[in-house]
Image 1 (cartoon, rainbow, N blue to C red):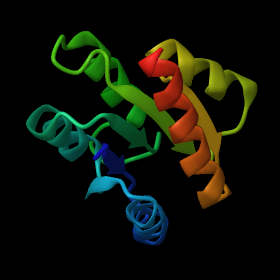
Image 2 (cartoon, rainbow, N blue to C red):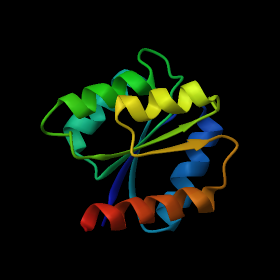
Image 3 (cartoon, one colour):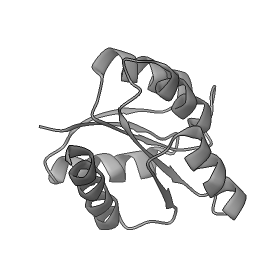
Image 4 (tube, rainbow, N blue to C red):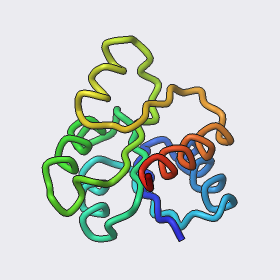
Length: 124
C-alpha cells in the first residue's frame, strides 16, 4: 500500500484530502505544520508527501528543500497543494524540488489522478 504524508494547516482541507486518499486506497499520515511534516517524513518514510506552502513553523517550500537534501527522503515524490497560484510561486515550488504543483481550490479526484500519474512515472 502506498503511504502519503499530508501536511496542511487548514483542518477542513486536511480532512478532505485524507478522506479522499484513504477512500482511494492510500495509507495516510496527516500533520498540521512544517516541523511536524519534516519529523513525520523522516519517521515514516512515506512514498509521497503532499505539502501546503503556508504552514506554521516552517513553510512547505522549506520542508520540500530539506526532504530533497536528506538522502533518506530525497527520492520521495512531493506535491505542493497550495493557494499560491502566481507564476513565481509555481516556479519556487518546482525549484524547491516539487514533482507536481496543485492550486487550491482543487478537485480531490484530480489530486488522486495526479498522484497515480506521478507514481506511474516514478516506476518507469
